[in-house]
Length: 290
Image (tube, rainbow, N blue to C red; front, side, top):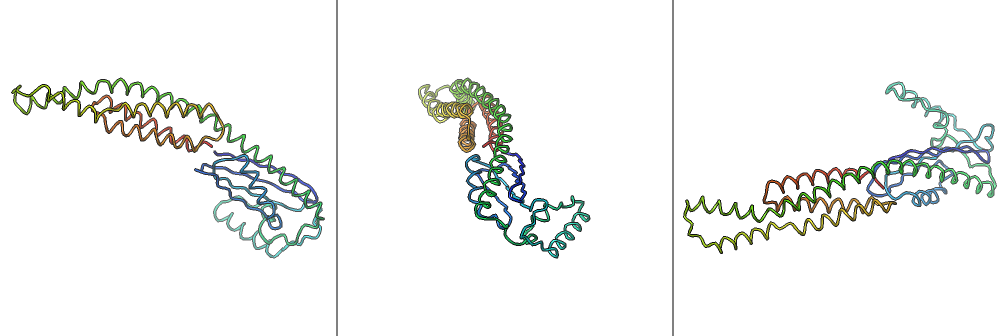
């Protein structure tokens, strides 16, 4: 969900720059910064972003300045501009930061005063042109995020294949559990009774059956397989799948944890731990997709 986009344009005596930055987020969180006099664009800008993006923390900044030689009826607050410039230069020298450019200073609140000297028709045309550039910026951002998503999808597919492979190993290990439980119980009885074999075999079989029922992991394995198949189907479907995938990753982790808790053999416990480690990697990557 990370990405960056920048577009610029000029119309009706104004020039502007859109900058969009996106980082990972559980839901779609939009932060817009628009200059004075252009607040009316915010709901339309939010709509354009929400139409293309489903997840992530997105910072959107619009800088608007008079085009060269087009001051019109605008007034420049030079005293405030000088104060901003002095403070910015002091910070740049003290902390080794880049010096601000004219566009950045002119975009600060209060530096440019007055409303654009435009008719209603010209203002509408200006807003339409600015929003058209936002659409281009959003398309660039979405394309950037899609490239990252393609790479992550390959990683997720590989991790799901690993989970499916470990699921097969867990099934094989689970089939050995009843025999291992019986051997362990008989060894414990042998140790406690010091060789006295007067224990009812039917009673031993009953105890083994009770323990085996508690250690039965077939339901967990069935659910694990179903979740893997659902996750693979999500990858094939494409589109915004991050939230659904996140839920499936949590369910996979729950089944792997129960598998480890029910494990009665060293091999099944080892496979369960490998499953948990692989699913943890899966959950980390899922946070990066839309």
